[in-house]
Image (tube, rainbow, N blue to C red):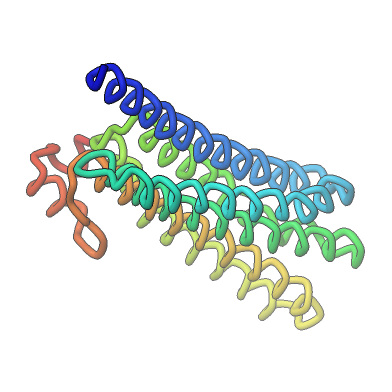
Length: 242
């Protein structure tokens, strides 16, 4: 009887953890969807779509609060250990990154609304759009690595962050050139700069999610550690091979 009761509790706990994983992945899917919408709103200037992204940020925020409460409840009631504890802690941190990605995406949506309302030239946003698609791919790879609990894939996805930073600086130089050539462009270009910096920060948060995936699988905090050092210490192959 005691064994049956223990097994029942264990099954309940497993279900709670699985539900928690499902909820964070659903939140990740929603954030990805918002990012896709914002890129579509830049490609084919769409005021209604951009406004939808702004409004949907409240849903992302609500999910963060809900999942955070679930994490706290599990920690208090179940007192998980080892891998289960790492899962709960990793999820509690990933939802913070996802909420901030939502904030940055909303920021870009507001820039697009302003671009459409003021008639700012879309040519300012060609580099911004390319950067946005790069960041979207980085986020997809990070969430996929986390979902599959694959530390090698997470390490590979982390390699995109320096690339995002380099592309960010290239787009910034292009925008500065626009301002130097035509002072009348300054206001419109400054809006585009806001979008560039928002996408750059989304890339940073995607890299953070990769770090959480590595922590979840390997049990090692790899924040502020070079990629090659991570690969060597965790025997994941070189950063190029990951």
